[in-house]
Length: 48
Image (cartoon, rainbow, N blue to C red; front, side, top):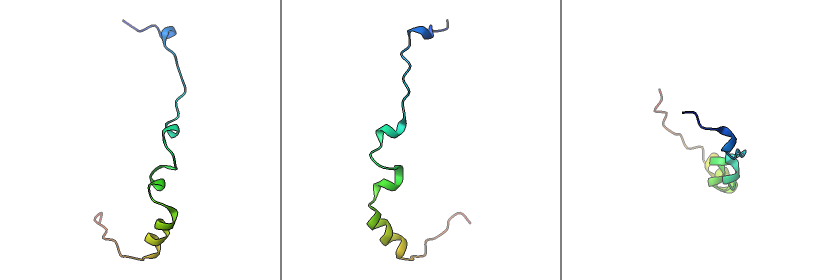
């Protein structure tokens, strides 16, 4: 049996409405990110 779509309340939901920032990048402050990027630490590449 197919549901009658006329009974559904269709609402446009943007997932960004649940985020207070810009995704993963908002989890740390820009100042901390600058410090991380400036550290020049060699990171292992396990994908080789």
